[in-house]
Length: 108
Image (cartoon, rainbow, N blue to C red; front, side, top):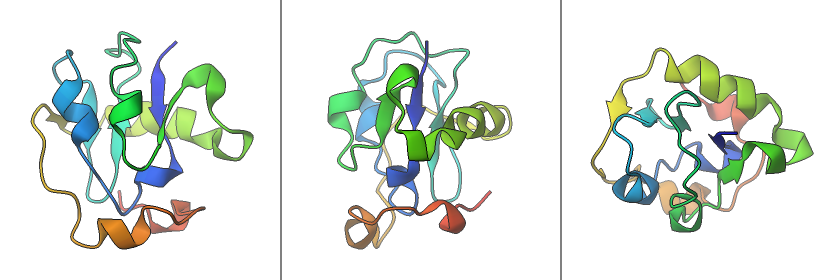
């Protein structure tokens, strides 16, 4: 079972999770979203409490309205580059952190 980054990360891209991840290139970075590579994730759970957007879930706990993010993480992890060090969140991340249903804003 891997962990999944869900809707809450879109337009925020906080990287507190990356800072605690013990696996190189487990997190992948896109223009306005992070994903977890399900192949490299070791299910350590360290990233979950670090996410300010509360956007990381165990695959079995992904909310019903975010099930599509399981496949989306797997798909984008194959094409986006790995990230191993924290970076600044998006400039307006704090304005978006509490918004819901942000999939339409995902930039690939």
